[in-house]
Length: 328
Ligand code: AMP
Ligand code: MG
Image 1 (cartoon, rainbow, N blue to C red):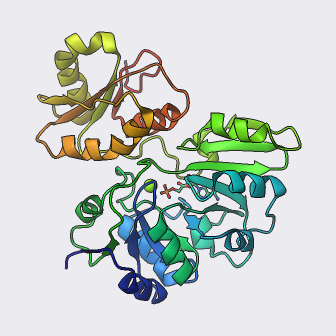
Image 2 (image 1 turned 60 degrees about the horizontal axis):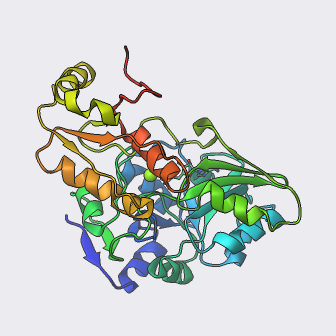
């Protein structure tokens, strides 16, 4: 059994309507999609990903009407922000409508909704209806940004992968929960806190923006997005003495010393750094290296916030001055 990569949508549409799972492109990362109407399809997503049922899925829609039918409370503020940031990498958590399968929401009374910008994702949703789709990787692993990444995540699966090229954004969507006076950022992404603040300046009422703790977003576990080899974050001034330290620290952490650590260099432009992040992690993991290191930067503004969120969760060790995850 091998996966098939194809650019046309008729096979993908047939499979989704029959309750099968199909890998689809979005502008953030590739998703493993099933129709929200198919409980069987939804179960297959969790089985294929080996994803725990406590981690809820995002529902992808292709118009505002579909979004509004998924919630009991399509708040004016949600509508306003959706009109600013949709279609795009922006997911809104709202009270769930009763017809939404509890498998999607992990039994929570809220549902996460996004209108993706990728034209192939939109076309599929027009043909099939809303699709639940987490990233197309095994649970906890690095997300795929190219069809071949999906293939390498599920080598034995008979999986159709819709080829939409390389994902433009490269990291998962911004997730926010909204009530009348409050926007809480549960997961940072390409729609940045600064962009949300700027949009809210044109809204009729004052709205507080805060960053939620990772516990507020189920599934936002400390270790996530992990490449196949250890990833370490280091301070720039420590790179000279790095080799010896990594050998020892990785030995302590994993039982095997790191002999061949390779740097993942972040582009100075955060949009490019995000687009390349996961494919660089995969490239280095497959290059024969036994450790990836990333040099810390102080900037956490804008898109850097999402990049460092993913890097700190992907890291086996964080040797920066601010956060040391390893035992001293
Ligand atoms: P993924 O599609 O795998 O990138 O992850 C979807 C993420 O969206 C989950 O891991 C949660 O962090 C978040 N999410 C989905 N549904 C909800 C919800 N009802 N409440 C809060 N966060 C959610
Ligand atoms: Mg994921």
